Length: 227
Image: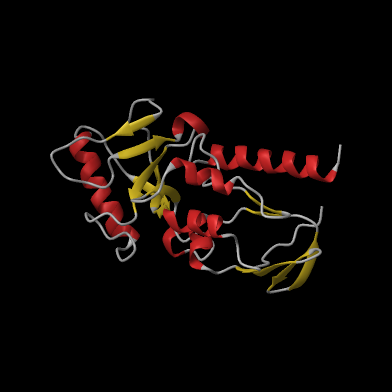
């Protein structure tokens, strides 16, 4: 398998074969699977020649794309119960209400908090990580007043401003409908689409992306006559 890293697709041209124009040259192939996030398709960063069908373009426009950032924090010790996820409930309005217990999964003293990227309670894109940690510690101490809570280190995503994601997950908006998702499962010539926006089951998750990849792989195998 010839895997090309750090190769950015600019144009997909379809004629007798498919040519992919990138920042490192042009590649030709018989089949193409488009797996970029929906927000990248919405942005027009990839040019299709000829244009995608009206049905596919309508699907791209009518399905929304949201932002969900994560801050993963390692603590000096485990001060929480061993549940899969933890919901923080207090009198304070906070964006840190929901977290996943990574200690139960990987054995580290770590929680992963989910933050709506466009939340009005905190501007995660213009607030330093240290200030975000202070706000989070205040909330944790309200919920665990008798615990010694110390942060060892943390890491935070920035999916909204990553040029290869531009967000976090597909979602339904005004004018969208589950039937539109089915449009993404349809091929256009030898151009196939996969990703978490192309599969109704577990929509918007890694599992839906995985299942869509299996679907496309089977379709290409059938179409090409490979065994």
